Image 1 (cartoon, one colour):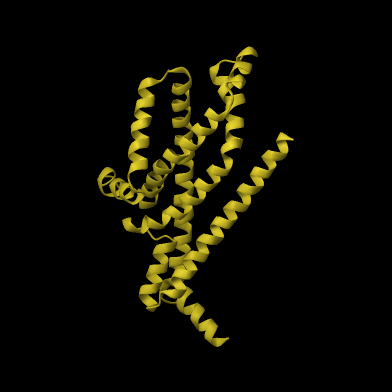
Image 2 (cartoon, rainbow, N blue to C red):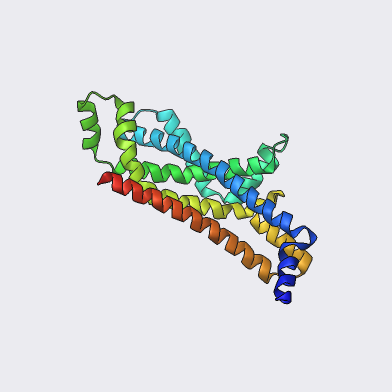
Length: 229
């Protein structure tokens, strides 16, 4: 018992370990939340622009901009994007690394959310749009009231998976000097000269966070299914 207590204090209390773990957990959650908000909003906007162009041929210039955005973001590593945002785009601005990370990951996630949502919108039968028009709804009202609710239900599992991926991707934020869960584990490792417990602990932290997110998203999905019935 004394041995276990000693080991616990060694890896989670001594030499500032408690502060590192708590700071890492807080920063991971903050970055994920910021990125999630940006990614969802940006993704839905891009998806609407892309689907509108594909269905009507309108918004040609905006569609071209979104295609360039998608090509660049999906064609380059997220770590490189993070470094570009921190050391180039925001290099001359006194912006907290957590905000920089949230913006970088949010813009990255937005590209994938956009394609997920666009596929959901395009999967809705055109008869739904015609039905909305026959009821006197304009294009915007039809999209908002008829198409998007159905598309959201169709792509919810894929969106949940993207949220999980986003949470785990924040593990590279340490490259710009911010303490997250992964960085906390390496700091503890450097003080204790032991890799097993810190890295396994970091993995457990991520697993618990992902499990909690999956649980609540699963409840949301089941509730939406019940509302269909």
